[in-house]
Image (tube, rainbow, N blue to C red; front, side, top):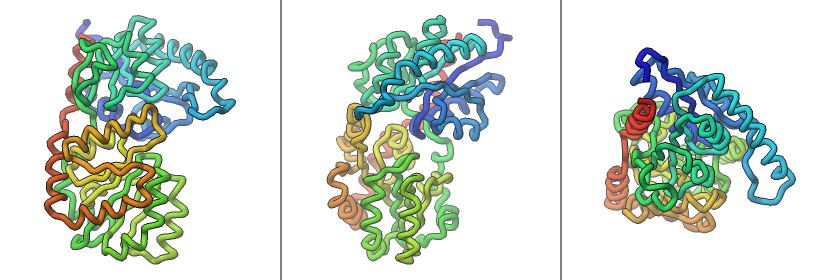
Length: 369
């Protein structure tokens, strides 16, 4: 490789925060290593990455690609046409930008980009966040040079010789949450002498969690528990109205929490979906967690992610269809036992892989060399 030549890298994928935050973390780590590296993101038009990536300071180009809906809908007929169009767009982007390597972080935007890169002879690297590989990544693995994973046993999906266990990159601001408690209590205007429950349904919210919390708001309040609740956009108005109507001063409700570091710092216990990125963050944060895997994901991969923790006594799982009856009972049960709280916090901290972004960047730079 010519040492004077500027390194250029494309990072592709998105759809949810679980794909976007690791991508930004990888980009930031690349820039930290070498500020001259030129990074371009490729996402799906109209998806979350088109807003979040520029906010993080990077350029992004959108492809018209769309995902296949699992229920029957006429929109599915457009999928192959939009894919072919996206493949042509991706090919042009790659030819114009001339990257040294193309990285896929999952989500359907990565499929045409990595496919086009492989056809043009550009080395590709896949970052698979889940314990159960997504369909896109399984199809792309054949041409990938390296596959970075966060869980053991991924050779049932990918060629063993290509796999490197790196962990999932997380936001840098989460490494220091233990020192942010005072700031967190002030930021959310909550009482440090009370227990605090944090409910996060992922970046897009989660209907089941919102329904359960809405139903149980008074019970949570009556047990003297403070609530920090991220509803997502769709559940926000109803939650806000209910909190105002019931005058529940113990409850702080947000459609999106921009300072997740402070939310994690304030929390004594966390209810969350079991997306891979979120789980990696929870391991770093090291607080007791109750995971409610989403049933609306491919191959039920969130249950498999959750079980990787549950099997090590590092989290509690409540199934989506049991949440109405069991979720808040489980919260109260854990909060009543200091021993259980400590056990869950200690065990989840042992699963943290804090150097994931650095490990992935090592692999990317090896490919370029």
